Length: 484
Image (cartoon, rainbow, N blue to C red; front, side, top):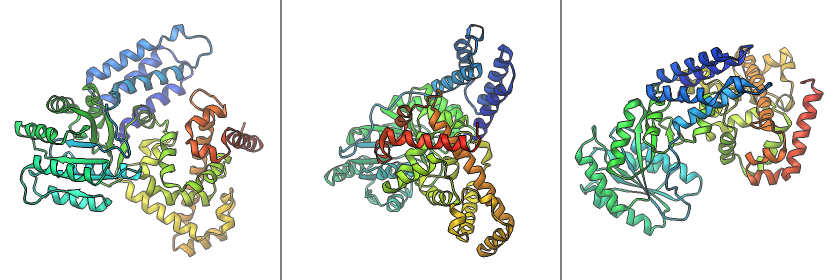
């Protein structure tokens, strides 16, 4: 999980405040001190942390709050706002549009993951309907063209480069011209990097930029440099018109917080963060959802967007109906396990669920998690339709549990673990639906909730009326179950 340790520390600080009986200046001070320590340990610059702490104190005057005001909510809201302010550098001046040809040039130091990020950027846009192409204008690093060629082949997009030509400016210009004629609407130019910032690097970038006239220049930066990101981002912005930043190697790196905050301080908009080597491990960077995930508040709209991209359109209304009704069966869990690999990595998905603690996912967990999911699915393959569709699998007889274990070739303990995981996920989904209904300020109006749903999905479930019906069913079910 991205910045898992920082997220866990921030969540604990807010949780301790929530558990106190009386919220006063001392409690506020203790909470802010703990948040300060967590940010400093994540390599965030001291002056920025001190500024955030001062801003929160200015925004909150506990003595003037009206009687009955939820002070914990006020404090939490102020902390969220200031963390967002710290990481927000605005939006990029340009965004690619489908069907309209554009050139995007990638720049950065050698070793920052630039070529891999070019591939992931192309794949991201390919999935949403773009026709991307890759141009290798890196003639400095041995094997650069081979790497880009392999990456392009992996995601099946056209590429251009040369083993013979040594002039990167000529290669870039030829590649862009070729793909313009082929009606590619996203032409990505990968440029040379160096081990250090030197005049030759910046001069080459300037020449390639003049030859290709990019609509957007993206600076790719390694998050492991922490606070040094400020100087790097400033230097590149002064040499070429950098319009956006992608921060790489954010998968569990301790200095990621320092890198993100340092880049934001240069007013360079971060548009994506790289969270691994695979083609799908590139996340949109939207400040408020990112902070929400960091604090265990989840990102339901983001999760729905990811799910919408992989769940067939004709299945979406049925899935939404079953989830809104609270019918989280083993069969539904099985179906969602099938979609997990398409949506993203396990930690990315679970971090988008409200109430999820990023620290529950230890370092190096992902392969173990995927193997566990495969075991669970094998065990569910040995279950009957009635068992898969039951909402009370915890009532399953011991003889059936033994039979499932034998049929799947797993020990009985694994079957019991799978049933416990089901109960945990069912509870999480119940909380998700509750939060979806309540929205940010306790608004249970279907009109308000509908704004977080895709228009086409809202139409398929019967519009506002259909959503209201589903909400009423859920409320009736909860009341009937004694959850008051």
